[in-house]
Length: 355
Image 1 (tube, helix red, strand yellow):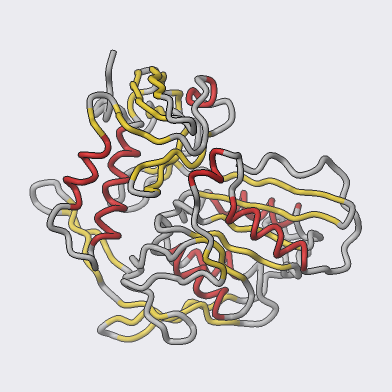
Image 2 (tube, rainbow, N blue to C red):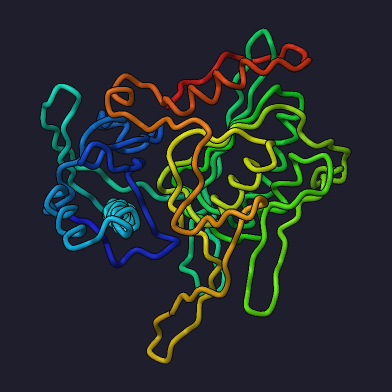
């Protein structure tokens, strides 16, 4: 079987192989492999170069997608091409996809991977396609205390109870890493609820400008968790990880906390796709997405076509990935380690593998 882009898959039967892809050095590289996934079981590792998906040759495909695209539109065209490639790895759970890869020593690797069932919750929002909502957290502990990490793939409501539980767990930690790499956005108003965990007074996270007026995204300090128990705003340092696949709501949130001086941003410039939009159904069954507003950060800076510029520009490098190092994450953890606040030593094991 040599399947890819299985059109028969539904949200409830979707499967994947457990890898994430990014464009690095002119090629497409595996940047994350989910532990226990089919790709992990077959020896696929971060840093491997993806050369073939099924019968599709990746390098010619990328070149073709960028032909005639001017420099200003190139980042968006590359992002769309990468998302289309990522989609080819998904399909009916149990179906197979054949990948051709090259490891760090230049050796070719051909693997036939079964797509595992995706068990994350499915959310349906308006006319958007159904989405699987992925959320993960980790706690790094040492003799000085702890640092928390949260990562989620979309700004949809199922994230909030998981985030609330994580903020309760990490409330005494000296720092928190929010990994928004690969997060393409979602419900923009959620930045107000999430921002409430990190401010000690009412603060603007930016402004949406429409033809009819303006709407400020305002975060008010949170005083309790979702169960009504007291929960003070997080007092530790906050590091946000972004890349060229961080878009829309992710950009609004990162820019807001960055301008407020509440977070330091690590990684690469974001997608610059931050115009609020709406979806309208068409008579033929298609859906049209159209812009309804502009957005500016708290300092008045437009994000569209510019993106969020990290405080620490740290791109992913293939050699580091091959060595098992996530350099933006390591830099964020090192920065948080330098920010000492009075917290008791936290119990538990040391830092989990950084992958």
